[in-house]
Length: 350
Image 1 (cartoon, rainbow, N blue to C red):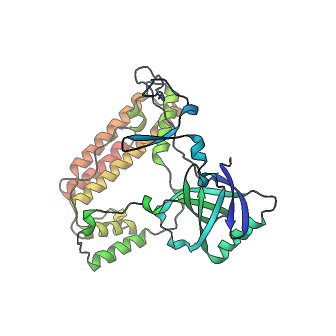
Image 2: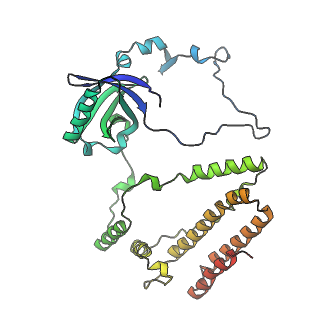
């Protein structure tokens, strides 16, 4: 890690020298633009509209336009602003953490003690621990005066920059003014659904599926060359799930609870009336599962050397069977039950 800024926390009369590090990073795969005809890289030029010359970064200043007039601000003038030259993180308040609006959090930074004697750093950390409060601070970083919150994470002081109050927009939607009546039974049912899905949050249980599949596509193209068929890698896209009809809220909550409790897993039909929209949603989930299964095939195909013709044949049979099942779902329950058995038989290899 490389420090991006050095300064000191002003904690009353206590001075705490620190180094600042970015605590987060972007994991997205970086892509650039190319010409689709020949693969040539597309680059943007900083061209002046007056002299038409390409300008270096070192010759570029900033400007502000106001009512038809432009004010040019040089780098030296911007650096001369007192707040920009300050390397002090000033503690102005200690507040309860629950009073901070999460929407105001912007970016997080780790603070490392920048001193041979980190006693002042530990003292501030212990003060925050003992009082169970968060320090509200003001500081300047990268040509901006910022508001921040100083808190503790794993024995490290973390500085989180906050948006200014006028940077958080008010929610102003006409729908919020509509009067919606929720019955006590609906509220109880939704609370029961929440309890059935309750868990302790562990971020390691979640993955960025898009970036994983993007890496899979890139790796497959590296293995097979530029003439890769994307459908061969991820499988054909299935139709949208569900009929789009609005189903009864209580029925949806009840079915969700039954599914969570395992009653739906037995394959029995619910005792109450079945909504077509919910059945279609179930069919859509099966199609989605088929897509996910198809998405996992390319990696095995690349390593195992399975022929494209064999994969296409298997995929065609699976897609055809799924289509059969979806069409049958709109018919009678007996036919729908018979149709549900078809995909499992069709997916078995010949």
